[in-house]
Length: 406
Ligand code: NI
Image (cartoon, rainbow, N blue to C red; front, side, top):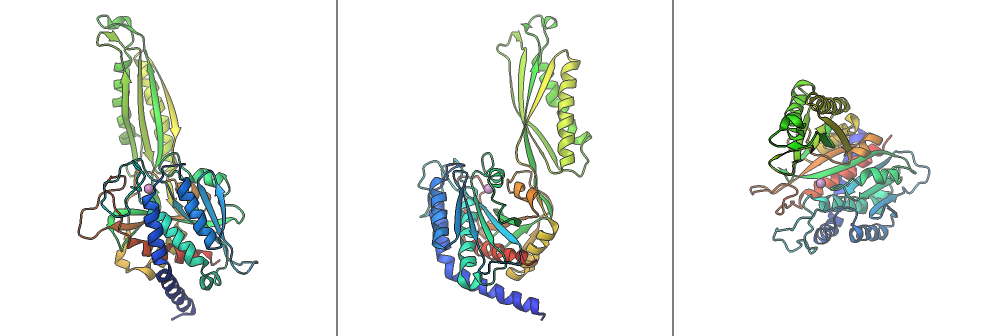
């Protein structure tokens, strides 16, 4: 056994011992947060709770935005030799009425932690407890940051936290993030190299024609017929303009037009969402969507205007940081419980903004209960197996310690 492995084994044992010490505190934090869920940018009580807990641990805290909390744990020695690593949790809940029968179910009517962000928060709080424990703190080679960000479910807290300076002074080299996954049973994790989540762009298309009597369509320009052709036309962008192996979705989910059955309509409004992973596919799809809408409208004597509203960028895991995470996972769980995901999710994750700034990794923690029906995230019956927290914490702490080494 080499010195490195021996040392590493000792550290793993030390972290396991500390986890035992703080586990009850972590579970009660998780249940408290679960009981008092708050939606994006309204997480005032959650942020207060987090801030107080970090202060008790003697961790320097800062309020970023109204409801974001940044904790910075400084190592004992001032002239540190390692890299500063951040562990991130999203803290917001969803406007859903919880129907799960547990003693700690939501007490905030109509709001629920249906995406497991209570689990993410509890895991990062426990990571803070362990890393600030004197015995662990003494081995830190650099500061560790704990990022508790608001509004992952709404307009994105990550980019705003970055703009507010959460990755600066001290400069963060890597960020670690995690999401619960009810499709994987507790005891397993899901990992993927490269893109884990798509980018999302909303778009609106306004088609303008000329109004006339429904009996004399030749005297007008029918915006409904033009818009209908546009809906059909954009379907071929994915099949004809995007490389076959590249993920791309274009959905038009809203079509509003017309005032009466006997009037030729002069304006139709379409709205949709576009999902891609690579920047090239995104650019191609946007350009083609614009050209297709404008071209079809023009051919029919109408006009079309396309407006994009950019959402989250795609989430991209760094190869090196993912390697470190997987290597670390092998010391925490059996290799067969590390599930390599083959495909990215076409859903979004604002952790992407941290990954754009510094090489980072985002993994999935299996939180499904063995041998029973597991409802998906954002479902009123969604429930997470708390036993998954142990793996989440160990992996976050040990990966952070490894990444810290230069
Ligand atoms: Ni989520």
